[in-house]
Length: 240
Image 1 (cartoon, rainbow, N blue to C red):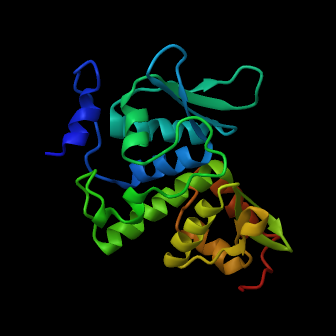
Image 2: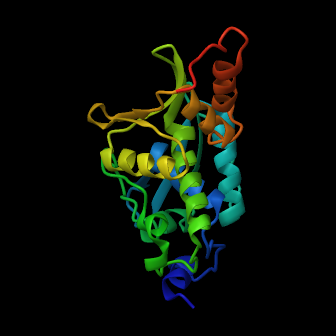
């Protein structure tokens, strides 16, 4: 039995908490969402942490809340941020922050420019912190789910140069490098504009492949991309 998992599950109170012992697509997507729009902060005058996820789209937050429920058995109510056009979930239950810090190597506090795909997803075959030892096809699926989580919260779709495109901007250049590789392995070519802190699809074919693989997971962004790709007034794009 993994002693690190047992330590995280029990914490200081010795109360056993639900903990995902194996990687799965929803958990990978939640890790991606954290890399995009999440924060881990120290609670003043305490040794514990607070976790928060914010997005302008309510359904994206609702989706993340389901990921948390299915993996950590924590019910998080979706709430409207005061004085902001955004929605959030947050918790002070320590099992989720401990997982992100101890298993996913996520920083506490400012993560501006320094996050990337965690080692537990990049090379799970050499990481013993979880019990997962996925096959090549399973690893491919997990990494795509991670990328999907990132881009649901930090991505966009628009018309670029007359072609529907999917893009993501981030100050974490290594995260963009990781995403380029993940999407390429899955047959989707993103243009490399990392010196401008972004990547984006530059062809109808790649944007369509992104749509067909449901990387936006049926959120509002997926519906917007569908409109850009298939609206009757927008059907004369070149395939490449």
